[in-house]
Amino acid sequence: MSKDIGWKRFRVLVTGHCNYCCPFCHNEGQEKNGASANMSFDEFKQVIDYLQDKSIIELSISGGEPFIHPQIVDMIEYACQKLTCDVSCATNLSLITDAQIKCLSKTRVKFNIQYPYVEAEKFARSTGVGNVSKINNSIELVKRAGINIGLNAVIQTIDTEAIGRLLSFAAVNALPLKLLPQIGGNGSDGYKEWVLPMIRQIAVSEKDKGTGAIRWEIIDGQHRTTVLYIDSPCFSKDIETCRNFGELRIHPGLRVQTCINGPLIDDIVFSQGDLPVTSKLNELWKNFTTC
Image 1 (cartoon, rainbow, N blue to C red):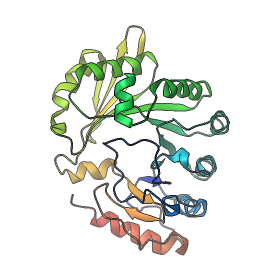
Image 2 (cartoon, rainbow, N blue to C red; image 1 turned 90 degrees about the vertical axis):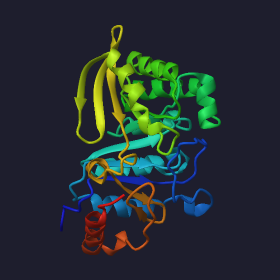
Image 3 (cartoon, rainbow, N blue to C red; image 1 turned 90 degrees about the horizontal axis):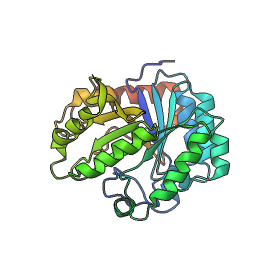
Image 4 (cartoon, helix red, strand yellow; image 1 turned 45 degrees about the vertical axis):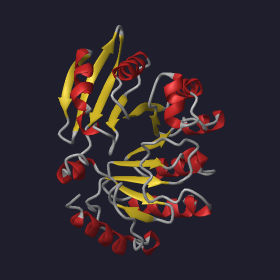
């Protein structure tokens, strides 16, 4: 069985449903209503079983909001048991329960939390219904349970005050922060011109990762954390950078998508076994050469 399929990162979108309505959400191609918006547990297991002997770096579970899915805990547990790679879950953390936190504390999953603003009013406006106080409480519960957690913030407008507060919040709470300019936003391809100097003012180290991302360690008083700024290769149509950290997206119904702006592909059938699926994925990787 071939372990080399080109793709090193997989994102499994277990649901198209979401309780937020963020304007920056990259939900292209997803069915957002009806039963078909949820991936079945059997479909999920087919993907994980196929990946079990493959040389991948990370499996990311997302949606929609994955905690809308009634079997999300079972899915995360199954992935952590079967795979040796990193397993993460992209969630807004608004729906997680104490019981789910307790169960997942026994796994190695990392939560990547969508956290656009520290300010309550801006947070609510950006997400449609989000309550930042509730999310902060859930973050504390998750941290106490020993689950690794980081913040993801999509920069939507030029707002130095908001970014400053976000950097401080991340440092004080020892939460790694990932900043991503909104793809398609007005002027977002130039956000780094004002964001990077802000970070450098409080940074004690800086490293260009060579994948379109720069990583800093920042301090705020006695507190510190790491910040990653990813200048999307979508802005420059830089396919080589995209290939370095891009991921294959697998939707409910096991439809495959090579790019967030690309079409869905229906002819990969994971239940067929290793050889035909590996052949298809290798073909997709070889053809993933242009934006």
